[in-house]
Image 1: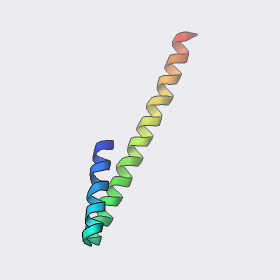
Image 2: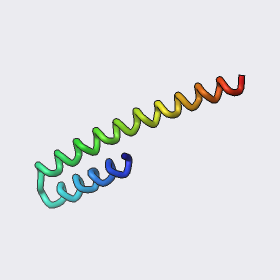
Image 3: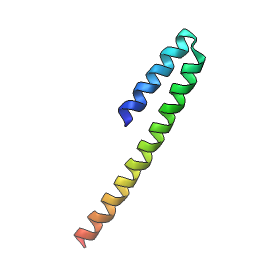
Image 4: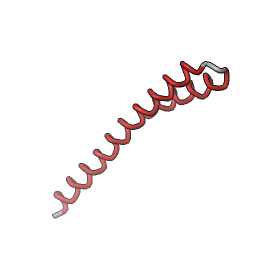
Amino acid sequence: MLKWAAVFLLIAIVAGIFGFSGVEEASASIAKVLFGIFMVLFLGAIFIGLAIGRGLSS
């Protein structure tokens, strides 16, 4: 998912350089959404991993 966010960010940058503002805005918003989803899942996995790890060591 982070890979796709980076791809859409790259598309947004290239579109911005060439002046395609509609494509740039759409790609940037998709990249933001995918990055946000990635961060939520990543932090959730860390929290669950810590909770399970503490439960096993006790």
